[in-house]
Structures are given as structure tokens and as C-alpha cells.
Amino acid sequence: MPRANTALPNPLAITGERQEHHPDAIFGIQKDKPSFYAMEIDRRTESINSDTAKTAYGRKLHGYLDILENKTYRAHLGIPNFIILTVTTNVLHLQGMLNFYHSLNAPKYARHFWFKSVPGFSSNWRVPPVMYGLFNEPWIAADGSQAPIG
Image (cartoon, rainbow, N blue to C red):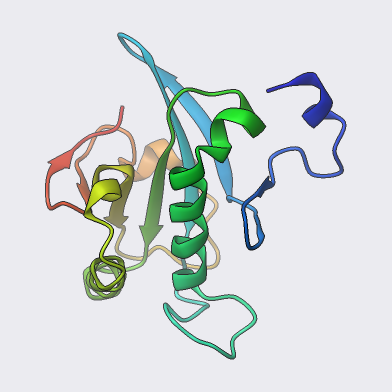
């Protein structure tokens, strides 16, 4: 991350053209080359698409598309790539998220959005992510492909 950004009140908040984005987590995994991830943890406490809700997952997707299109992640975080992971509570909600992504007509970025449902995932989530198989079990990309991220 550029040194000037480390002094910001929230250095991990990424400012896009329309709004500031606050991923639930940002991390990297080193394999042959490093991959960098923003993680959204969705416990079904917000709607997917709403004009009136304070937060809605759909607005986050729009924001991430803005960040990807303008490569804001490169300037702000100093990283070469950026993948958005979303973990949610069940397959039906995951499918609603995928359907919303497809309604945005952004196939160019489909390999940047990966989704996973974890049965029983709730607002009381306290177990380390590795216990849920988040890193070694397959995720579903918005283009339909599946692969582990770890």
C-alpha cells in the first residue's frame, strides 16, 4: 500500500467514483504468484438490491465493478490484481446474488467475483474461516467455473 494511504482514517476503504467501499476483509495468498482478495461476508442481514435500504449487496457489486473498471485497487492498495469473494448463508441466497450479478451485464469481470455458501453460517460466526473449508473447497465464479482459492 502506498505510504500516504496508510495514514488515512480507514486505509482499507477504497474510494470509487461514486462511493467509498469497505470490504469486510482484504488479504493475499501467495502461490506461484500472489493473488489479492476482498471478502464480503453476507449473513442475509441486508437485501441484495434495494433503493431504500441503508446497505444492499447490489450496491456493493456496483462499487466493486467501478473499482475493477478504473483499477482503483492498484493505486489505493498497491496490488496488481483484485478478486472479490462473497460468502453467504445458503445456496438459494447465493443464486440470488449470482442472478443480480448477471443482471448487471458485466461478463468482462465475471472471473473477479467468486461466491460460496456455508450452511449454518450466521451472525454468530466465530470459527476461523479455514474451519469452513473456505480456502480448500471450491468457490463458484460468476462465469460458472468452480475452483478453490487456496
